[in-house]
Image (tube, rainbow, N blue to C red; front, top):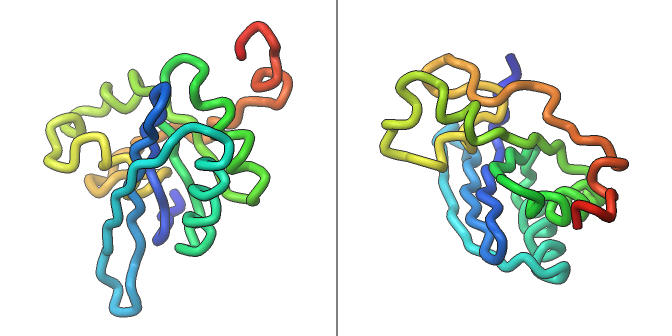
Amino acid sequence: MRVHRNCCGLDVPKKIIATCLIREDSEGNSVTAKRLCGSMTRDLHELAQWLCAAQVTAVAMEATGVYWMPVWNVLEQYGLQLLLINPEHYKAVPGEEDRPEGRNAHSRTPAGGPSGRQLCAPGGHPGSSIRQNPCLT
């Protein structure tokens, strides 16, 4: 299991994207930054630039429906490692849903949680044919 020291969790509904960036400072302490951003293309590019400036190595996206697709398409252009989280999978991890961090817990490590249990299944990488299906956009 790979632990990402600088990562970000995104909750992607229709209009406002909630972010929780967790990074390690020079002393090894975790520093959290939360931010809301819009879902327009301009906003997504600003989000990507913010993530790159913070030296984020992985982004875990929690989304239902099709709202994650434009976010994925923009962030992918910046070379960020992206994971799509199935909210049902995350909620099914015993003990994690009751954590004080709530939805932000998945941003700790896209590969594994602080409890040592896997929070995100690896391989959450939808192909471009799925993301570009005109019936879905």
